[in-house]
Length: 359
Image (cartoon, rainbow, N blue to C red; front, side, top):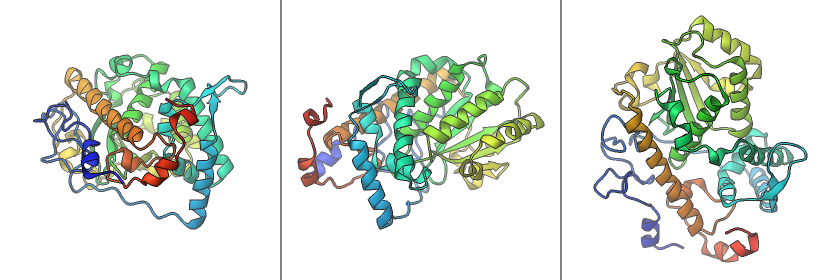
């Protein structure tokens, strides 16, 4: 087992900007006074409020545990995967970032989304790995995406009552012409929401206010179908709830058009004109959505702060993963900073990086 000193050292930097005098940012301790990255109202919150708690997942049955172990064995046998979703795609070895992505929780999400069908879950996992390569997930950098977010049309700010990162969508702040980069922008922000999820939370809360949206500012039906396909096929169980406010008839028409492509599980998560103060702590809910948070987006302050925060969170995860032996099937709670006991015997019996071909 790891010593207390080792565990403490794994928590990473003591503040969002690396300054020991700044607000604390480890996942496994609740932030004091609801701090943001720099203490101002211009940067993202470091974590959820002390009263926001994820709902513990139900325990696995013996049958589900057996299916998970079988899927884990299958995934560990993969030495390479297709570089694209094309049937005749070339293949290349799993990268460390892909092995890290294949957590215990990830495998369970795909099993649940596949109704516990092992062949379906394995096929979907492999398909997503190929899609992530083809779509260039790791090439979507903050610098590349920056211009798309200059007006704050997508915003990660605060957490709901269950600790889900809140992703605000403000279509009236649209600042670019319709292009694939707009979808890449959304995918990039989804990835950053995942980086900011606290231990025990696997999903995000999406909030959209269409009060000021005008014709031409919203997504096209084609874009809507593409985003739905990405969410449902490659981010299963990542959408915890989607809260829509003030839909004009134009947007109702859009939802009607894409309705046939929304799977039943996703449709259940769509809520319209709910009282958001019952779902998100008022101090972390934007005033324009009915909360008490006064916030004016300033790209020059918000974007670097978000980039620094998620980069440090990511670095902490990688450090913990490497410390535990760089295994497929690692616990996300552990990777996010929760004190999970490491079985040293299991680590000693695990194949080395040389044996698995990783470095």
